[in-house]
Image (tube, rainbow, N blue to C red; front, side):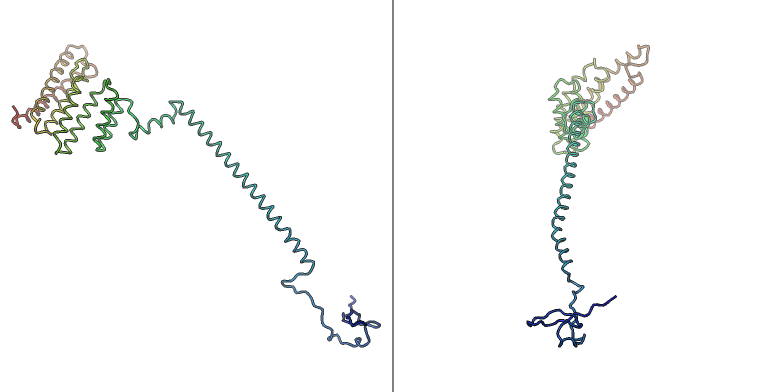
Length: 305
């Protein structure tokens, strides 16, 4: 390849430098014999941290375009984020509307699972009003097991006040009497007062127990009332003799009814009276006789006339 001659600086006629070729007929005569080492090398662009005009223009063009690309990319991402959020919001809204519709339909159906849960949960927590005497008795029993005697008594009284004609109120009165006796056992200083309350509610439960048309139900009531009277005598010094005497009277009345049942059973072709057998009557009578013997022993020990 042919090499180009080295460039040199020549001074023109007007004192200005000009570029000439180091050869014949070019430049000035005084400069023809200059050595190559006297000619300064051309100044090349540095390879580090510098750019040529072409690369600088290209870089500037790229930099001028970058903000638009960045903002365009950012705007695209923002739009996608907004669309995604809208889709999520719409999905959640549809889900909530579906749940609300299901709740409304379930509540209108009394046999649905949701309706049953809503009715049973408050009742299990003891916050729903009792709808039957069984509910009231269960609530009283629950409070009694927790040692909440006052709450149990209030629950029983609330039932009898709201349902004065309920045929099971005598069961509630018996439970209230037993709760007052439990209070008397735990608070000996006020035992007489609690015993008085127990006797009051025992007396309210006596009429159904004396109704012979109720059969075995009335006889079970007599037995429970006799046991309440015996416990009242155990807990109250003032009323001990009187309550022991009441217990014996109730047990004796129960004994008379059991004998009548025994006679009826003997005359039957079947050995059963209702759901009880003659043997059941005899066993019941044995328990009554044993209780009378026990209470009479207490009367004698306390020198009651």
